[in-house]
Image (cartoon, rainbow, N blue to C red; front, side, top):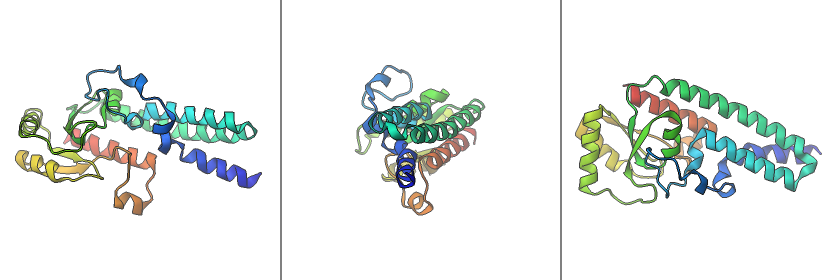
Length: 211
């Protein structure tokens, strides 16, 4: 019925926001070289992973509610098309950057970096939320100076204090990258969803890698 279809549509529209519960992260731990180690559970940061995870959720919904299979299939197809278009856009943008290293507040972007040949350097580790030690800070400042990094990213749900300290040392600035485990007050006020936040991340990171 119509009410059920609206509910199904709403459920499917938000499926990608609940991927952590629906997908096994362990099968992604074998990708090396991008600093996302075995403790990085942020698999959904990768647009390509998110598509797989949405399909997993869609299949589970179809199994539990086969009567509305067509609704789930249709909504998944629409979401997949949008995510694939964004992935293609990101691939084209990052294929032209002069630098591939970036500094981020939290090591949450390893899978995203893997997809586009980039390398993240975290102020904090993938699983920690503590202040970095002086040696880590010094190494990040050295890296930024050697590679020409001018923008240091921070997590919207964390403090930008350390990012600003590094930025001040290198004569740069800070900007936000959202690891999609929460939204800033501004993002909530603007009503931004997963796809819009992903787009903002891509634009901010591309700008930083080409400045």
